[in-house]
Length: 101
Image (cartoon, rainbow, N blue to C red; front, side):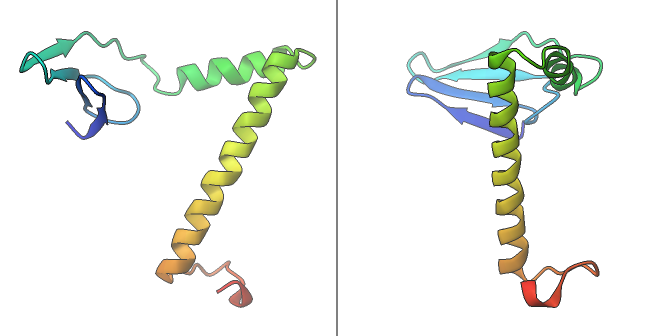
């Protein structure tokens, strides 16, 4: 198991952060481990593809538009964090501009 989420009552332990195939709940109060039934999709990107298809199929739906904007903002934030980590770590690629580092 490689991923953990901590709750007041225990810890959810999974074998990954996506395409999860195994999960357990470690109950602190009862000192027991509960195996959880997990059904993984054949394609680990199925949920994302379905959501993207819904955005494309409903271009005038405000709810899907709002989700799309949230995804864009999240992508920008993730990209900025990755860039900052690379810069702070001195990791440079051939395509990088020298003045950026």
